[in-house]
Image (tube, rainbow, N blue to C red):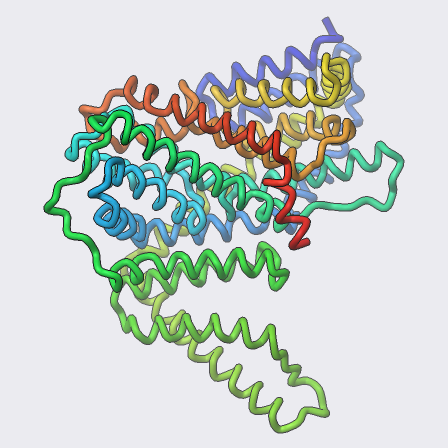
Length: 516
């Protein structure tokens, strides 16, 4: 029996998580129980747990994961600013007269929100409360409408910046370094968050295109499922469209451009994003909107100019032009600071900051507690021989590296029916990724395949999180069965997306190679 303790441990983990007990406590509790069992039965060297302190310190001091709370804060501020409502209203009136036009607008809004907030739950709930009733009133089939809303909301997991990609970058980088050590290389290379963000851009946009093609084709083949919106919906003018779309688009370019351009680290870019989200909120609250808009534009201009024409004021050989440039930069910084203070006052007055910080603390604590507990779990699992068993299992798979990858992808897909993406990312992927990389699979390409697979876990019944979010926000006449049926075609489209990236690896690897 002792030789199968690792298998029993994994089974006990599944039972504990499905019992409804808090996830991080379930993971840590199972680890404690099986560490004790392994020690008592002589199947594990308890001294291995001495590495737990190093793992905790490594997590707390991890420079990559520090970006998570800042990106979550950026998304939470935008969520509380009601930007989703504006986008949905404007896009709905722009495309509403087409067959499937409301569905198209929901997918496009989902993509914009994904790149600016990255919070799946907030996006699905917002669209479920605003767009879904409008689609139903227009005569949409409840299954189609539910499927579109659920799927558009999950784009926040694959379109950067996203929490999933940050966690995945850390996990895959560690796996890549472990694989290099096992190959006898001691001058190892690491992978960055920026590389994974760059790798996910084209696959994310590809999924958006697949969703749009499906909606357009279905709208033509079955027009009764997605009729045009009522004629009384007034089309927005160009100024209205620009006022709604430009702020989040500028924020996206500021954050991703800073990371991909090598100007800022993900943590620094996330802080820029949080400040940008605060300025958008201040402008929405109509407190000196022109000054806030001018201040935000000044900060963007300051970032560009300082990058192109840097001035180091501590030098003693500065000429007059450099001193004047430095003075101009200082003035621009003051104008930007005034705009930030005004936006912050407005956000504090409306208690938007209070709610955003509360939401950020809750989500960040959940993610880090799960990662910490998973580190404890994997340590015990390795001590019981689980890592060797998984490596042997993958190595013995028929079909070699391809067969092993198919098995791993199917296994992750099945786990997605029951587990959250964080749990799968920090428990399962560190066990399978090193072996797959040693077999010759590109780590970035592998990471994007797994990212889309994990994104699908939000849609798969019975425990897909998007399904639960929509169930809580949807009107009562929409049944749970209709929501489940509605996501099925989109799960198929996710599989098509995985297949395309599998057959055309350049979709994931070309942009990181060009940029990095």
